[in-house]
Image (cartoon, rainbow, N blue to C red; front, side, top):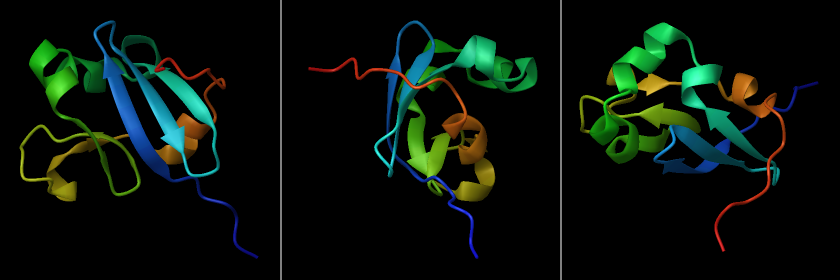
Length: 94
């Protein structure tokens, strides 16, 4: 029997270095990049233009397309199982 693997369908980055992450099962979590990600990962995406402009959904998860070109081998992606375990959050957009 296959275990459910969550798939990210939308991400919305905010100026406070948080990202609302929307899953295919309806769950929404807020990823606090500086707190929830390792310092090594956060250091690579903390430049404002990278954090805001390169934040995308790639390969079914939250990612930063730092190299451009949407190449899944050249992005920083976060394990969707890890993200799905974050505390459920409310939608911030109207």
